[in-house]
Image (cartoon, rainbow, N blue to C red; front, side):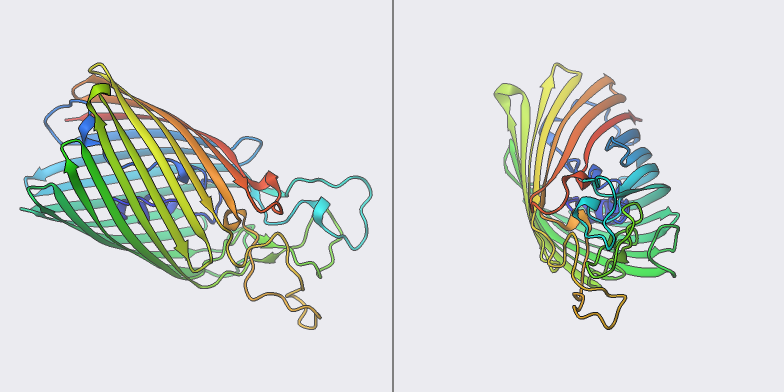
Length: 418
């Protein structure tokens, strides 16, 4: 939910976002900073723009929850002065356990009172999957005009997605001002799979539009302002999340009966992205402050604040500490359990029109603390080592704290310039 890149729609919406919230496993990893390039502080490198990146990352929630191992490769190639190519491939291995949507047994009224104490932790179910994904784009430059079409693809056992995007930028004022516009579209298919609540394949289509400006305020300060609009239509439920209804009798604390959640089949979202980058000469470092307000037709209002400092040490080392805070209100149809029984048409209490117990739609906040070390071994070989700590907390005093993850994220990458 709190994951968008605001420089290029293609990279974020059509590709990096592909590890969807429906699986729940990498909702925390999406909190990793998506930073605007700090041109003032880049380490010296070879003149050639051509490069290849190799990256390995682990996301671990601990306590038997979700773990993800990601391997990715990227290349950029300047084919001609007016054409550059970029491609990326990602492989994810996902395993662990995720909440079912049910509240802790201690919060449920059972038809027959169970003997012994009831757990105060929300139930979780094991899951595992693999994801392969890739993207390819070609950037055409004609003087001050730049056009970048992109195609992306992602596949899991229960999810297939195709994405297309088109981005345009215009350089003005001797390249001190750049106007940006972009559009992306995703075609998604959600497939029946063990543990899901769907019996046949479902479709979802989503669009994202972006307009913005990058402005050099002075030789050391850059401002970025982007506005984005998104919509999605089709199957927007999480096929793995259930909902408990109070009028449906429960007997077994170890086998709680749930109904499939039901979300609106259309969603609109609006967000603004503000980023200010400042190079500090006396410290030989660069600071970036970003702020992003967000709202959507689910009733969620969110705010993201992020601060990053890049400190150059000597000729070969850069250290980048970062902090990110995110907070949101709950969706209009979120709850830990609901009145009625939708399986009984004669129930005296009608079920609500929409309902979900997905904790990611609750009122909550997240904190992400990070540190990245970049080392330049030679002009053509760089290494990055990063660590982030991600903590999510509920704010509604109703959702069990046991559903909110805390994760460690470790990454190692190698960049080769040629």
